[in-house]
Image (cartoon, rainbow, N blue to C red; front, top):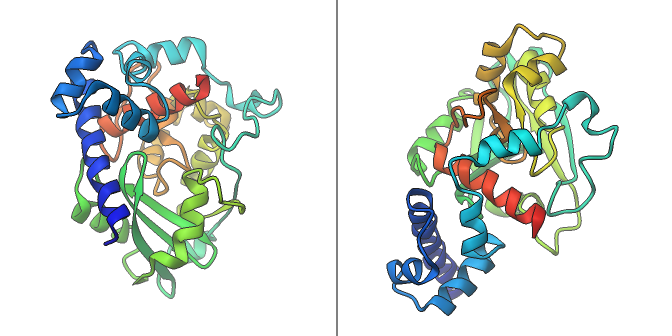
Length: 281
């Protein structure tokens, strides 16, 4: 491990603790937050802003209990019209340029047999990320901050039990850099969707939700032409294997509740807060 990697790991852990504190005590002052992290207020502010993209105070505004409801009232997107009115934009920070293709239903039924899946661990703005991909593109991203590394690995490999798994971070690295918005990433991030036909329809709808905006499970069901399938849509959202890039965190309950999140609700809150803050930064 290089000194830079070790330092980034230390800083990530500090920021992870800070986000946990803000999540449970959103009204703390900068001085109190810095004291909890054993840092000076100025150093903590600089470090937090570098990692999260906005100041601690700005971030706190997006972790209030009413944030999800505010998103529904202010940034609710109707999926059928989102792209036609240009809501998705073109900025790298707001919407990643993705290209994707899906595995055929027949191949999906074979549970990954004959498929080679490469995997590696990477740091992300939302904690340690397990990334998996085939020769065609990224097929899985799991966040381990809440669930743990072993669980993330078992979860993703369990989806395609007959595939051959090969650790190869360097093969995936260019795609991962692009996925998380690295300034020197020039290529789009290819995705390879491995799922049942209904799941893929739901995931395609999720990719039409612009960054910083949200929708509801019932709206997704409506957009795919099956308005009564809200429960099935919720299940498909929960089975999304490519977290963040297929933004299941942007799907909320009609009441404004967060609903569930496969990798832990603190991660979902962080994803929504991070996107909202960056949209207005």
